[in-house]
Length: 293
Image (cartoon, rainbow, N blue to C red):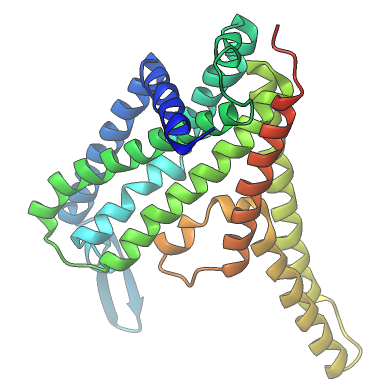
């Protein structure tokens, strides 16, 4: 199969995906969330919301507008929070994966793809490509609508490099989730099975993250018989804390560090590359031996 045929297959899968009402609705939701975020930020900045602090006889009035940066680049990063932290973008990705892969097993429309003169491994790859295009389109809409509203109001200041990295990291995390979802869809061959599998994947990662956080917090608090033992417990607490960076949850949420302006973790980026590679190869391998009749 030459690259031209693969590209045409990817284009066909992309057209099929964007013809779905769910895909178009997801893009509308992305635009709405971007507009709502900018308007909410404008309200917070102009409302004077805040709190007072008293130190001795001195009382200071603090406002959210003064505490947080509302430069244009920062507002664009803020637009990622409802999409990512509230899971709206990821919910649509999971739904679209279930519809474009798992439901085709149920409806037996996947046989049309198999009848094409293309190798089987190219079909999962084309579906991953189509879902990735949808992710890029939703991020483009988020950035476009946020920019159109925020930049005339808040200006062009802010850390634009950090903003660009936040969007790139979001897309990379989306691709990681897409490959896991596509693999789950090909294994379970059902919409419900895909959703349950991804829920369990999320649950296991969440529980593991809580366990690592709890262990790293408890170790330094354990009573030690001498200072050397206390240093050892603190050291192992730091070692356990670094395990958080190796969890799939940290890899899929790599954007979070850029949004909070914290150093990026190479461990999480490496895990994300592994997730994409292993899930993609596994999906292609599973489909190559499946019966779609």
